[in-house]
Image 1 (tube, rainbow, N blue to C red):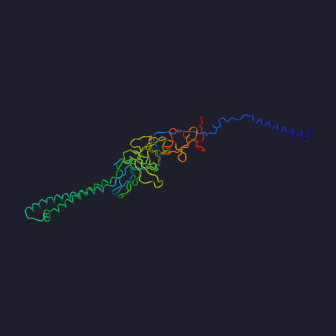
Image 2 (cartoon, rainbow, N blue to C red; image 1 turned 120 degrees about the vertical axis):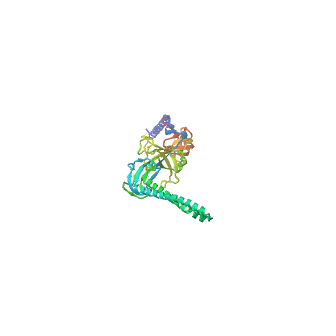
Image 3 (spheres, rainbow, N blue to C red; image 1 turned 180 degrees about the vertical axis):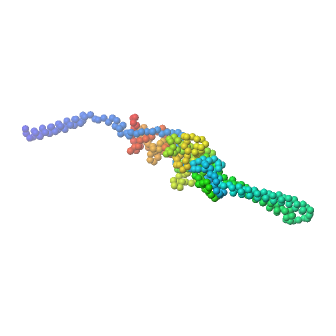
Length: 387
């Protein structure tokens, strides 16, 4: 075989191989892309926005305080000769109940002396009235015309006024002595809970001593701190008519699940809290210790306790309610529309601890995307698990 013939055979084999390869690729079946668009759509969960009238709840914390709190003190001094058995910390006493008795002996003696002085003054006054009659008759017998000043002297008018003044002074002294004797018996000024006692039997006390601490049991307050932005949404009972916003008081750390107390917003304190810079509202709680209407399901309030208050705000009408976790940065909401992502700018009218209340920007029954997405672009394809 010649060299030239060998070259041509090699070129023919190469050309045949190339042609065979080209025919193979041209005739091979194409892979189908069925379902490609489905697999590229992002899988999401959605929740449906609620529309209607809603009553939000403002959640805050507060501290329990007595509405009536006094340091019991005495107005007269002396030796304590009796202390009531119920004048001890933790006890309850009724209005007018005797708590402390100061030795009344000196006050009784003083009262007797003052009554004796009054009797003498009244006797002197009666004697002076008799002298008035004699002076009047003597003046009529003389018959001389006198100046008004001399006439009063002759008729003993100054002596009569002095006698009257002595009687009045003696009566006042009797009243004061009687009052001091009454004040020697120190009584509860109202239905009270005893928090402390600072004296004992035999103690010598001066007027104004601190005998103990009493708090009223008819009403307690919860002093709650509320953000300024929420204050205007609360009904405050400025006229003490019982029309303040209803409040549920809970203490998760100490009370059983489901236990709570009820109160009403009574007052807005006219200054901010010095540390938190929050507004302060007073919540009134009637019968805080459940003394009038015992109920085992209603725990008593203890002074100084930190509690959670859930204040009912004013009703919002015709708004869309959405859980706060679905509000995205910039007050936006992700909505699924026709299988695509739509980013909605919304106006939030009010927020409480759980929900945002939207008055524009979100349609009723909108399907809100609940899934956090890595890529957020308007028009991105979305799909649900059931698709």
